[in-house]
Length: 82
Image (cartoon, rainbow, N blue to C red; front, side):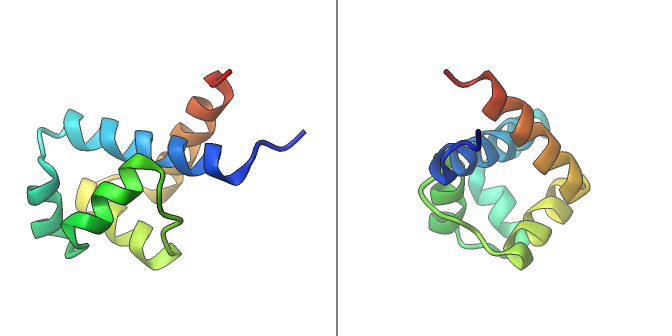
C-alpha cells in the first residue's frame, strides 16, 4: 500500500536536512550555493512543499550528491515512519 504524499514529502525534506547538516551547511549557505530561496528550502525540509524536479536537481547539485541518493534516502526514511 502506498504511503500518503505528505509522508513522502516529509521524508524527502528530512533527507535534505540530514545531508545538509552532514555537509556542515546552514540553510543560508545552501541557498547561496543552490540559488533556492531560504523560505523554499525551509518548506522543503519541513515537508510543507512539493518541490519541482528542477528545484531538487539544484538542491542535490549544491549538496554534491546525485538526486537518486536523496530519493533513495527519503524512501528509506519513509519506511521507518509509523
